Picture 1 (cartoon, rainbow, N blue to C red):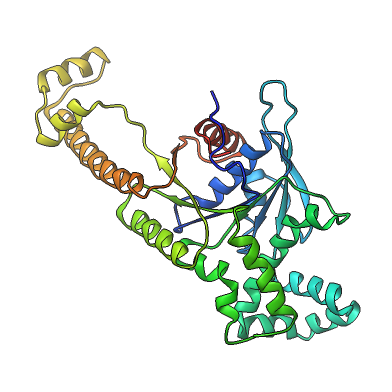
Picture 2 (picture 1 turned 180 degrees about the horizontal axis):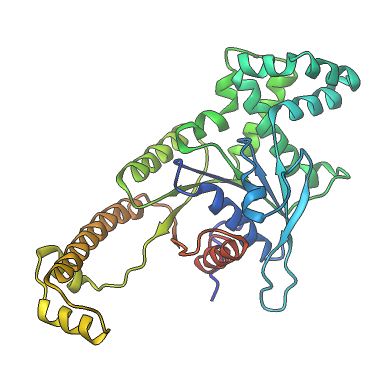
Amino acid sequence: MNRVSDWPDARLHVVTGKGGTGKSTVAAALALALASTAKDVLLCEVEGRQGIARMFDVDPLPYEERRIARGLPQGGIAPGSVYALHIDAESALLEYLSMYYKLGRAGKALDRFGIIDFATTIAPGVRDVLLTGKVYEAARRGAENTSARRYDAIVLDAPPTGRITQFLNVNGELAGLAKVGPIKAQADKVMTLLRSQRTVVHLVTVLEEMPVQECVDGIADLRIAELPVGGVVVNLVRPGDLGQADLRNARSGRFDREKIAADLSFAKLDVTHDLVEALTREARDHAERRALEDQQRRIVQDLGVPSYELPRLADGIDLGGLYELAALLRAQGMA
């Protein structure tokens, strides 16, 4: 049974998280979940890693929007499609120069001379304006009645949590660089979108101390910058096969070794003292790990934002796995 979406007004979903938490996987699964609600979704990446192409098993993405998947059918309703866009600052700047300064071939000549790379390197705030500006352009299409494809939702696989506020707060980054002019005007428009109810910034973590603390700090930084905090996705959750009583016994070392030996013998295994002791050590380690995870889960739950959990998939992430995760996000009300 799918819950009603926690984010009915959001059109732009920004996904961030500490490296290694699976933020790109969550962004892809969220795009599929939204497409399963009959929405056409644009999934964007800005870090130059071609992660979308690998996850969806398609050719490396150019700087153009391409359909890569369809959502899951829901209750006889035809699903929407997921389109993907790999955004790089150089291509975005060429497009910007063509649109606003009519440079055309002259802009490509600048690219050959390395001027574009030079400009975005010495002024990283400009790079972020260009990257977020392309997302803004896609989000504004319906309002501006452009002929380009209109999307019902956009999912941005954004930079990691440690840089997300700097990346999204483009006005702050440009404060000492451009106080007037078209770049400043573009930044103002982007900030209007990013601080509106149409945008939510979701954070991805795992149940470990450092990623959870970075998530806590990231939410605090977003709130200081007046950027809208979405939900927290707890990713790579281990299965909870043991109940709390068994976990408490395992942590305290209270094991019925005779029963363990009998179960091993019933399974046609050679029972030795070393084998039984090795299994009890693993059980104790597992129980201690679960206690630490429960502690981190309570910290996430105390953040005062919706949280969602996704399991660690035994077979790794492929397209089938993404659909499985998408269905879970849908069921929990994230899409």
